[in-house]
Image 1: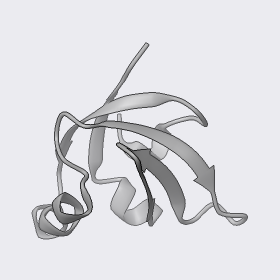
Image 2: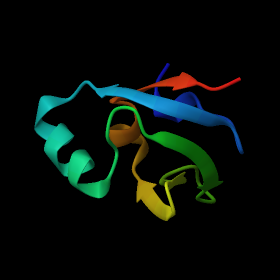
Image 3: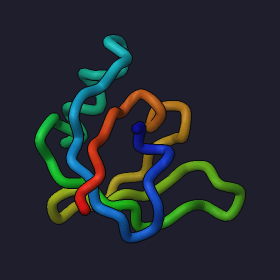
Length: 74
């Protein structure tokens, strides 16, 4: 499952970033494997999305979010 498939308010754990060129940028933003993430907002036209990561809100394009593999928390 990737980050674009997360539902509002649903939490997940980041497993990995599949795009090697993008991974450094996302890691610098705090999107690290093992971190808990939650979908908080979606822009009016669906792109970008805002996720809550630790105590920070991060906006990310859907194209970039598709490369973030996650595991939902039940």
